[in-house]
Length: 94
Length: 463
Image (cartoon, rainbow over all chains, first blue to last red; front, side):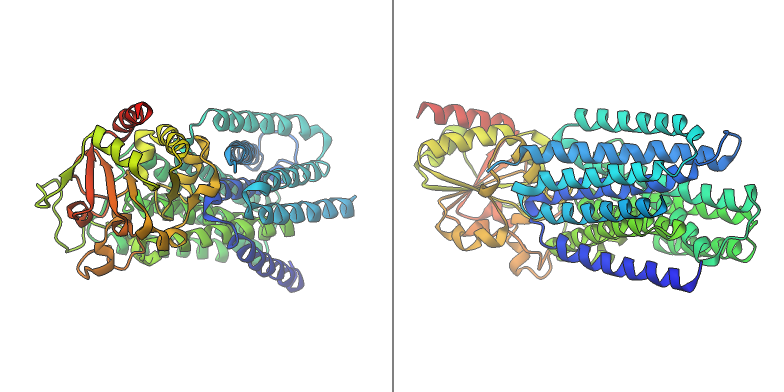
């Protein structure tokens, strides 16, 4: 990895964190639980990493097996997180 | 093809950001969550097109298994179980990061025999460390919240020193892998330490401090995703991880402020058990309290013109949210103004009370934050406290010796009459007596909140 790529990654990290702080500090307390389960679902983005870990044929390698397990775990996090957040938000009525 | 994939990742990142932005209003939040989910779908599809075709069936199978489990749990879980469910899902996210980190390490060093770049290797080590702590930490939080293990704080001598030494040992193990990439023993040690640390860090934290811990673990899972982004040189993972990380940090901060304690103080644990203040755990209280019966309580409610309800964790335990909503409807019909005052740390996770009340169809514009309602409390006829204790203890305002001194509270004692639903005179989480109960304007309505309130509602119906 070149220094240039690393710097670019750090740029993205800082800007995205700033963006996150700005947006999330405006979320009202009444939505804190859905915010938490919704952001929890977003953290399942490691699914992308787990899928890429499986990009090889056969099952003999440890890396592949770990990748497949990671897919299942990350998918539970993603689908469960979004579904339960939706279920909660459906209930909020004026 | 590569460009299209990168653009798709960019689109997904934008959808995550806009989705979070839409969370700032209850009316747009559901749409925001949907956008975020579409972003995730795009991210997954864009990743799948890069794969070798032959690997697709098994990957799709794993996706289907994970989705089915997630969907099943999400449909089945009760709203009162939300804190433990969030903790559990969070743990899975952490474990997935561990899986990705080790898988990447194993493939590069053992299957391909390649030298891993230092930055990538550090990121892999961080994914494993943070992911491992998140996994076992969340699992312990889940077990505590669901009552599988005691929710009490477990403290022992030298606890923090042991944790610190473990962390140092973890760093040494990581350094060994950095020095000699094929020293896999270092990786094993790091993994074992991270799993152990997750357990040890969460066991000293007691039940009512759980909102802080869940927020913090949520933030960790975001950081683990960020580390994975550095491993894979993927901007989208970093954006998504940073959003989750900052969300967790903000919520942690709000929870700590709500208790007037520093994060360090919460993480050190043992609140109430180790503080030197006068504690009357399980002992007889010397407060003289006035009791009120069901009929009298109903009469008081009936003659009021404004009522403020202050719910706490006890409401969730008693499952009293539905009967409270019923009472609200009856009071509203009698032209009595009913509002709710919700303390930020009420319940076992941020916003816990709001979700339960939303479940029982209480409109969200009736749910107010303490500072929004504070000026009105002195003009309120009745404040009804259900299952809350420390957050309404006036000692926080004036008693410098109280462990909760300085904590922002809901000043319910300013109201004309306070009615407190309570099972017994047991003290709250902080283990201190609540002087409010001895105040002249405070009446105790003893019994299970749901059972007594049902009787009050029946009385009210007949009035």
